[in-house]
Amino acid sequence: MEGSSSLQQVSCRAKGGAPGFKVAILGAAGGIGQPLAMLMKMNPLVSVLHLYDVVNSPGVTADISHMDTGAVVISLSLSLWGHVLLYNVNHGLVRGFLGQSQLEDALIGMDLVIIPAGVPRKPGMTRDDLFNINAGIVKTLCEGITKCCPDAIVNLISNPVNSTVPIAAEVFKKAGTYDPKRLLGVTMLDVVRANTFVAEVMGLDPREVDVPVVGGHAGVTILPLLSQVKPPCSFTPEETDYLTSRIQNGGTEVVEDFLYLFLSCSLLGSAWLYLQPIRISELPSITEEHNTLSCLTDDSNFFVHMSEAKAGAGSATLSMAYAAVKFADACLRGLRGDASVIQCAFVASQVTELPFFASKVRLGRTGIDEIYPLGPLNVYERVGLEKAKKELAESIQKGVSFIKK
Ligand code: NAI
Image 1 (tube, rainbow, N blue to C red):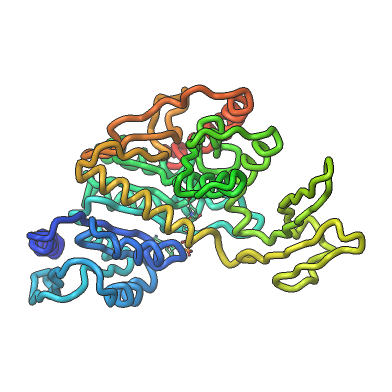
Image 2 (image 1 turned 180 degrees about the vertical axis):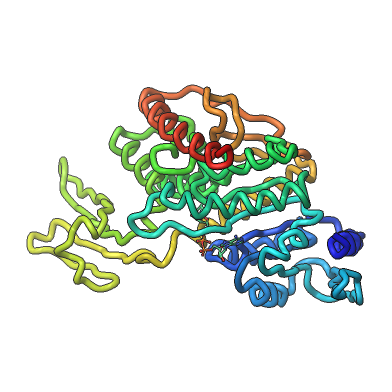
């Protein structure tokens, strides 16, 4: 492609003196894509940012490019024949790409490709319900990667991650470009939530908490290893149940309407307060209430706070963009050669008998340098692991079959 090679030459010049990596976001105009693009624009490790979507990417690009962050880079225009007509220095390192015909230009020469393209979960949908739509989108985008930047690190966000990562692997295998060290399913949001929820229960600063979350990225496949939390914490069986369930269902808390019951009681002379999230759809008699409500009941032993969450308008986008940037930054620091960059991710793995599994990985100059074993698990976690593996095996198989068929 003539236009593409011109673009490649010029983007290399753009990188010239400015150290940094070239990053593409596919699905950049979406709920996750937009804040993700904004945060990546603020990352000093990024020298060129390509924003691709099938809708609205020019507007998002213009918006983001007005931010006065980042290096001065070269922008260009292409003639009808793909030759560079002019290029000039401007104040944006962001380029927008719209629609399938521009996918290859968006991908050429990229070091890191982040994929939040696809449809999000709606109330009542499981991540697997998304499969048919998102599987096709991920397949097309990965075919573009095999052609244009086969050596790029790929961060796959589109759900169901437990199936889309195997889909991507099969696409890359088919094209002969598969390197398992470079394909990572993003499970960082589970870790971010786990750190936050554990910190809440233990009264700690979430920035100081590190919870390994292994397995996969849907329901029971999300397995927080609370026995390995840093700093070391001990949890009662009730706390373990509450935290595990909240971490596994954190996404549903954002997607669905929830009623939070703050239950108070007195036990052994002390007052206790419990937070109990209950789906509003499970309590039809209370759905008439307005957006946020706090009221004392007759016997004053509990009060309720109702939140409409996103009420069908989408799934986690802001915390996900934050988590995706945290993860992408770790990948870029690994590429730069920083030592001891360790994060959890869903990757091709021999940690269990399954071909893919999320666990801690060390990131380096070529992607994953090392995959860590799970470490000692307690009985609760061993039971959880068996449940996780059963569901994970089906989701992985579903992804593999989608391409093999
Ligand atoms: P959204 O609908 O707001 O945005 C998706 C974007 O993808 C849209 O701008 C859409 O135009 C674009 N898109 C659709 N088809 C495309 C294609 N063929 N090529 C390029 N772009 C395309 O959805 P949202 O909320 O941003 O979620 C995106 C995905 O991320 C969903 O699959 C969602 O389930 C997943 N997700 C993953 C999480 C994780 O922890 N890994 C957490 C939350 C969401």
